[in-house]
Length: 222
Image (cartoon, rainbow, N blue to C red; front, top):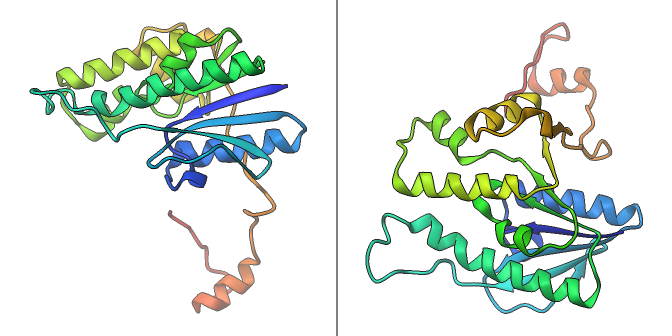
């Protein structure tokens, strides 16, 4: 299958974050299974398309944000998101014309992939990461005009999907409640873990290394 993943951040382009790391792991895993995978991601400087880890990377160069003559402090985040959303949609249409895509996945976060979802002729999968209403509630942030605008873009992105995936039942239920979305339409698909990289070492060695009694209980907090 020809699969396309959309993200504003991607490690191979020097931008690290949770969504970028998730996208990289998913893209490499799908490519290893024989799929043709393309990632559309933002680049800060002009960069040609390239392959990394068996995945085709399509950089879209956009300014960090657009600036309005006035009122930037009210819509600062939106002006940061708009250039990428529009450029990613344009690049996706180009790719789809050259070789039709079978599936595209976008994040709901801040509406990064809304332009692509609207441009896609193939099925669209929306992966929930942590919608802005949930983040704002956990941080005790106020609901500004900008916050309502971002939430609206996320809601539009989610509703544009043919399938919606969450990594937990709690996240699925929170999004469904916050955005008045049918909970039954959200599938729970936990994130994968590379068990070759993340495997437990010997607890006996660790206790010795930390100078603890062998019967001591160890709790790791990251």
